[in-house]
Each structure stands twice: as structure tokens, then as C-alpha cells.
Length: 275
Figure 1 (cartoon, rainbow, N blue to C red):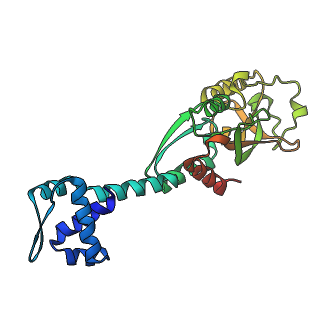
Figure 2 (cartoon, rainbow, N blue to C red):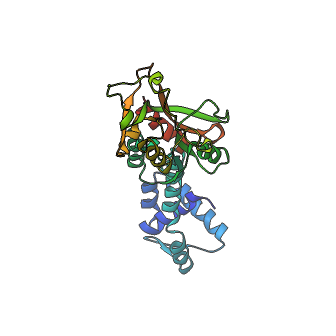
Figure 3 (cartoon, rainbow, N blue to C red):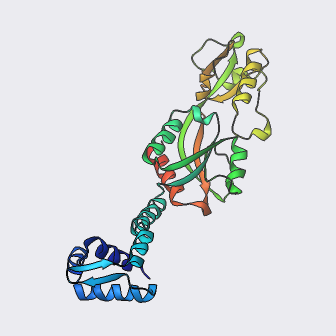
């Protein structure tokens, strides 16, 4: 039994006439009659009474109609869903993101625009540092991530630049030279406050708050991405570096072996919005 048999059967049942049903289906009446006979033979019962004015459903035919009436529509809907999934329009996307990378305006714009274009897609967000996000990508727990790339990125992952931002010096107010820019050499006497090694090249909000608290207390200075200026902490000033400008990148990452239609669509949108 094929789907066309069901469509032909339903057309005859609705029209009550083989000639009108054949015209509606765009086929000849003899082939239609043959298809209905084939269906009746496969089902094992007579589905229609052939009467002078056309065709009437038998009691068995009426039951059969009630059971198969939704099949053509369901098959069409399933086919359309499969096509949409192949285009990355439905399904799910597991997206990892570093909390501080989200402070860059291009990141929320990317997520907002992608969701607007694919309202049928379930987007699951996970926040972690870049090292954890890389591990989750490699282990298949994430499909794609927005993170800060580094020299030690594994070859199993692909990276696409999304944005970059200047690295600023976060200084205690008491040591602020008062100039628009500062040179690293001028800060040589101050301790440099670094992030814990296991945080990688990324920062959690809590880590940023801890770093800025230490800077505010006069314990040293730190180097942070420009977007960290949004963390307003009393006693801390941000100054651009007068040395050759150092910039830190924000990238979209995915497994080379995990480039599904949905991941590809997200990467394409990121490349449209990227630098």
C-alpha cells in the first residue's frame, strides 16, 4: 500500500464519483479504477459500492476512510518538517557561551537575530569558561560555542572570528597617571593580577568581580577586555594601552565533525555579523 493509493481512495470517497475524482487528481478514470481495485485487493475487502451515479463507501470503506483521512496531511507535514530540519530551521541547538563574551554587543545581537529567523528552533544556552566550553564541544555536549580563542585550541575544532576588542589596563585610582593612555612599562612596579589558570582565556562574572575588587584595594593592576568597563567598581579606572594595541578575539567554535545544518546556519549568521 502506497501513499498515492490513500490519496486516490480519499478523492473518490469525497467526490462520490470516479470521473470527478480522476479529473481532480489529473489522471484518467481507468488508471484510477485500477488503483482502487489494487487497494481493495491489498486491504482484503470491498471499499466502494459501484452504483449508477458513482461510488458509495461500504461500511468497511467508511471505517477505512476514518483511519486514513489524516495520513496524506501527516505525510506532507513530516516531509516539510524534514526539509526544515535539513535547513536548520527546527530541532535544537546547544550553545555554550562565556559570560563575559556576552558583554560584547555583537554576541546578544547574533543570538537575537538567529532566534528571530528560526522561531521553531529550541536554543539551549550553557554558560562556562572557554576551557570548559572546548571540552564540552569535544565531548559532544555542545553543538557550538562563543568563546575567546587561544593558541592551544585543539585541531578537532573550527573557529570563526566574531569580534575583537582592545585589552585595557584596570588600575587603582591611586596609581592612575591621569593620562589618556598608559604604557605597560609605567606599570612595572605594580603587581599584575591574573586569572586562575583553570579559567583559561575566559572569565566568569565572579572572577571579574574578584579581580576588580583586588584592583580597587590597590593590590595591583590587571589587563581586561574593553567590554569589562561595564563592571563599574569604585576605585578602579580603565586606561587604553599606549603600546602597540593588543586585541583579544571572540570566536564561534564547533567540532569539525559536527557541522550539522543548524550549526552551519549559526556559523553563517555569525560570519555575517562578524568583524
